[in-house]
Length: 185
Image (cartoon, rainbow, N blue to C red; front, side):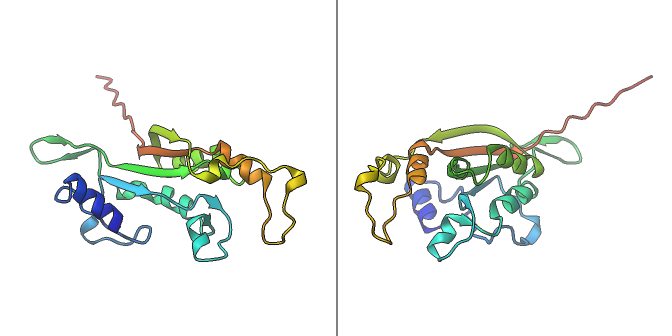
């Protein structure tokens, strides 16, 4: 959250944005709703063996729980008063996630889309990028040159997945409900 505060100050937006750090979705006072909820969850389903692994492995189904409950914390698309209806932009969820779980066969894209659907969320836009960190471009090791040391094992499948990895920003919103009123008079 310190990084987000610094970025807001640098961009001159500190007065326009209120940052709230929470554990997933706690009970908030006065039925607080957000215009924007950003989530960068652990990317791989699996057990975290260390504190550092918790940033990568989602052993508590945090992603699923987030997508199931985020919609109820978003501002609504419109609000009504006694005299008029005020159009207000609907809140959005920004989900930043890698396709690494899909590449390693730990979760399918369809499962991710089903979690969004179960949470009453629809995709507005998806923007993806290819990582440029050194591990993303590490060449496959020649099997003859592979090190035999016990603690230094190259996983060819993970290296291949890193080269194919895409990190995506999914812009999500509450699904639009369409009501039809038929007048038979």
